[in-house]
Length: 73
Image (cartoon, rainbow, N blue to C red):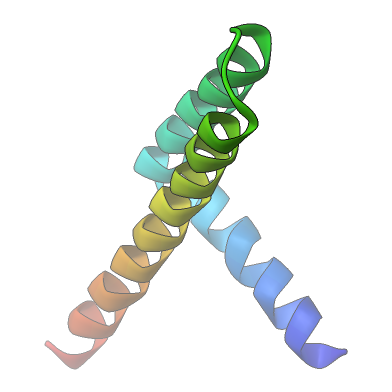
């Protein structure tokens, strides 16, 4: 249960502290809306959604690495 709470706190911290995360999140929302509005195949829609989630995960990982480097240096 604590892991879910800590994960949520991490997402909130990234949302508050990283403008680039908010930017990519907004673009992902737009791309998902367009993916379901345009006549795409289910595989194409799934790819758009999956790559959007992967992009947000990479941004979160980048934020974690930056925080670790800032603490150590």
